[in-house]
Image (tube, rainbow, N blue to C red; front, top):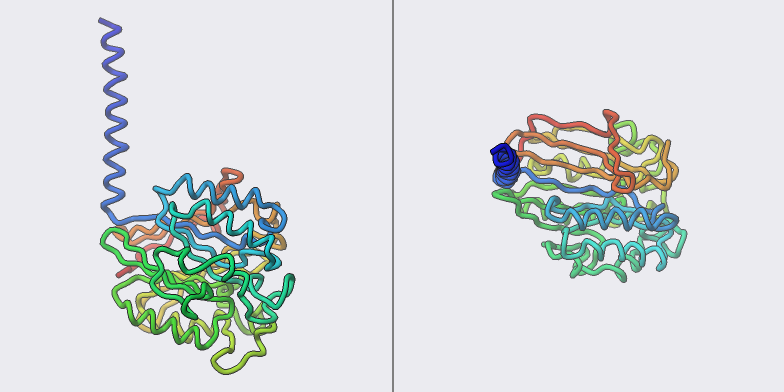
Length: 332
């Protein structure tokens, strides 16, 4: 009899746990919450520590049922050469068909030759290793048929999301295209990723800040080819649209992190974040030790949670600038 009761209790407990796990999974799917990953600058990994980068991507692939998409904020490579782009492509191939992705091109992803960083806006290698066909959720690209600027659509539950991926120092003509795209999809929530936008002091990148797009070779371009920094991008694009909710960027060294919440001209809040862990950032080890951002969007509870995690170390960063939430978030 005692053996029977022990078996019964164990079986009941297992069934109850299984029921709770399954039921909570159903609730998560129905409440419209979802998670995605933001990949900060991977340039040091593809140059020196490819095993860390490939481990990040394998972890993403292993968690394909958890994440709705992955976003890379640029500086995919360090020296914009075939060896590094080959490693970068190998990583994205791991998640291909498993986790949809988009990326922005950084200053290290363009230039006249290897080791030249945005001296010209030459993105021929990026476009040789990636084509628009690599992005199954793609709605548009600019220039058409190239991966320099991308618009991707994601439908999650009853929500419609767009990810607008913009080049380093977006040109005036790129911003004009981006404005057209946002106006074309007024019922979508927009996320913008671009390489240089928020500074490490949690202000918009501009003024006398370091590493401004206009201080590279592309800064000599004028007219519709002229580049824009973070502050200019806010004025010309971000603040104008009430359906842009989040902006993610990298590029900046020093602390490598910054968080800014701004109000657009329509009264909407925009949640803007810098995250960068590459070599040169204060305290960086092994090019960043694989740290990335996990973003959870919970529309029902009007909340966005931000976690910083390394699949390589299996560790979270717990400092307040690395682990935080936004409350009373209004989405479409």
